[in-house]
Image 1 (cartoon, rainbow, N blue to C red):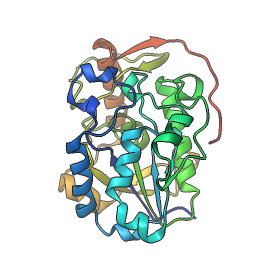
Image 2: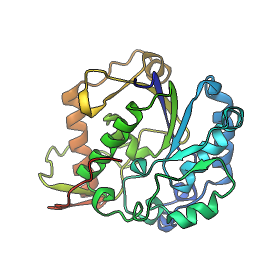
Image 3: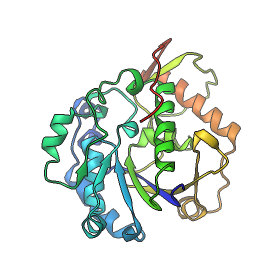
Image 4: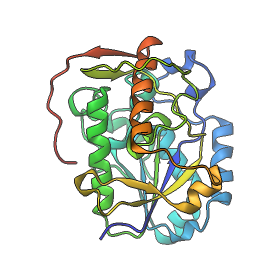
Length: 272
């Protein structure tokens, strides 16, 4: 039985968000303002006590966002934040590359964190974890399937702005921080993602249900209440519009040097 609702959350402000120069920082922590954003999310999030499961990307900023944003329900229900490598950020920049399992164990030792799904190589940015668009699509689908198989009724997932477009298959406002392009060409081969803009603000959350007719794709559909909260009566984009936006994103990122084409070729593991 699929969860009734999944709340997707972008992490709070990290030090890499302060400047492009900070993209060279490995696995950066949250800024002081980012920690304040978590406290504000904790107060603004509707009915956090209803959460049965909290999942986060194993990068430090996402793990701390989860811990600091949902402290009351974590304590009340004795939950642990489950680190899920499949929802790590898209690029292979140092700021988007996670730490080794041993480092994460030291960082989060004694905290309510579950690292059993984090194995050596999860941060290699190779194979299944590579920054190619098809590899990201595959692990996003695997993560959706994993979530869809859960028995918990209400789940919070803390991840990254660029990845959230792949995860939700919604490309609206993807170019907010990248720029726009009218180029319609598309790379026929795999595309290496170096940086993706995002329409998600730090600690923004949106709520979704699973489309029961989407099969193995485990497609997410934003709830009416969630869309209305942020977009009012604006009409959702149709499938063709979403496809065109994705093409523009890939081409724009290529032109700006955020990605490069390659023939790739490695197989992606089928299961989490």
